[in-house]
Structure formats: C-alpha cells, structure tokens
Amino acid sequence: MTAKIIDGKQIAADMRAELKQEVAGLKKQGIVPGLGVILVGDDPASQSYVTAKERDCEEIGIYSDDNRLPDSISRKELMALVEKMNDDPKINGILVQLPLPRGFDESEVLFAINPAKDVDGFHPVNVGRMVIGEKAFLPCTPHGVVKLLIRSGVTIEGANVVVVGRSNLVGKPLANMLVQKKPNANATVTICHTRTKDLAAHTKRADIIVAAAGRPNTVTAEMVKEGAVVIDVGVNRLEDATKKKGYRLVGDVDFEAVKEKASLITPVPGGVGPMTRTMLLYNTIESAKIAAGLEIE
Ligand code: GUN
Image (cartoon, rainbow, N blue to C red; front, side, top):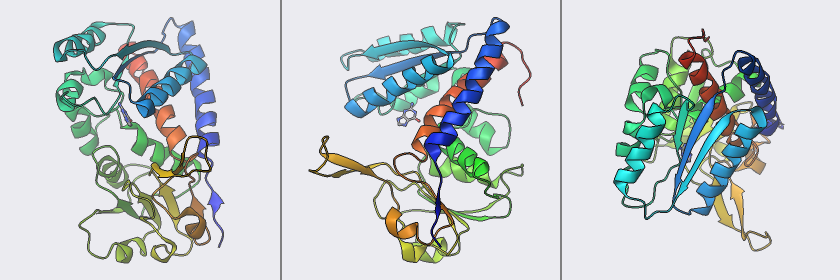
C-alpha cells in the first residue's frame, strides 16, 4: 500500500479560514481576541516561530502584543510582564516562548500565567482539568494531532494507538486526550518511551502510531502494520551541505519507507507543525469568547 499524504498545511489553512470568519463575527459584537507574546533571548528557531505566530494573528484578525526581550532581563521584570498581561483585558492568551534562556525557571514563569489565559495549556490547572475530562485549554501540538486525525477521516474510537514519546508537551497530553470517554477519543492508548522493551512489538499492533520522540528513524517500515495511520511530530535538523541553511528538517519516522506501508502519513515539514500554530489561534479565540461570556462548544 502507498499511503495518502496528510496535508497539514492545507488542513491548517482551512481551519485558519474558518477562524478568520469567526473573528470577523466576534468583531461585529465588539470582541477582538488578543494574544500576548513573550520571547526572551535571541534563539533563531524561537524567533522564527514567534514571527510566524504573529503573522498568523495578523492574518486572521487577532490583536497581538509582541514583547521581545534581551536575555539580560531580570526574573522580576519578566514576572512583572506576565502579571501585567494577566491584568490586561485586551489580552486573552499569553504565550511565553520556550525554551527560556538558561537561568530562568520555566515552571515559575508558566505557573504565574492566569490559567484562564493559558492558551498553551501548560499550567497545572489546565493539565489537571484535561486529565479529568473537564473543559480546559489543550496544548497546541497534541490538540493539532487530534484535529488532523479527525479531519483526515480517521476513526479514533476503539483504535489501538501507540504514542512514542512521553514528553509533557506532546506524549503525555496526547495519550490523555485520546483515552477520554468522549467523542473523537475512546482509544486504547499505549505510551512507549526510551525504556520500553521491544518498541516494535508495540508499534506493529497499532492502528495509529504517533511518533514524538525527537529522534530521526525512531519508526521504521518493519515497525508498522500494513495500513496503519502514522503521525510524525518530530522536527529534527540534519546537516545537509546541499541546502542553503546547511540543514534539512526530518521527522521521527523513516518517511520514504513507511509511506509504502501506511494508509495515511504526515510529512515533515508540512504535517503537524502548521496545526500547532493554528491551535494556538483557536485557543486564543476560545479564551476571548469565554471572557465575553459567550457560550462555547
Ligand atoms: N516552544 C516549542 N513549542 C512551543 C509551544 O507549543 N509553546 C511555547 N510556548 N513554546 C514552544
């Protein structure tokens, strides 16, 4: 079988077009969703992520308050900025770009964000609410994975899902979302990680494999059942002298070989990545609706 490629770029663009319409409707009611962005330091990857997020906001009509700070900023100044955004009614979502430069306590900063503005879904209040199945801001990458599956027509209910990777950003929250007793969940989920004995024995039984290990070639063709759905969350830079930047991006899956066995597969880039950014916009709009007292689904 040769897999159909899931076009994350297109699915994300479709979602953004829907969100843009929704924002236009909210504006007629005097509601403008706002995102506060904090980037500390000059990490080039973080700078380009943040620039892309701000471009997304502009494209769909979300107000964004852009704060780029030198890594010489003090802990006190950073905490004061978070507090200011917590109190600013124009801001519905606060994004502190990770990783923070060395010397900053990420947990301290993330836990200072008002959970009602925690559009990354990293605050323990939102994590806890998610786990017990209450309404919560869901972290953008795993939420994007679920949306990709749904919009690609994949049946999650009853599926054997193997998540490879147990990070707080992707593996753990994704497994939690998929196991909920809710529509578009109800999966049987196995989380595998670096200490898993015989990873292939697990992945070979999976109807859906999600690779989020942060290592190229974690999932190879022999590890995949014929017809499985394969979602690649990995973003790895491999040195490549033929490229202008000197590197190319690859995922965690051996794409060329696995696509001959899977029924559906996401590419890297152009799979999960564009969905992550889109889910941030989605959460910011949800937050604005809640703040305005509107019903949300
Ligand atoms: N750095 C890499 N991914 C993310 C993300 O989803 N949110 C934030 N805040 N920082 C990140």
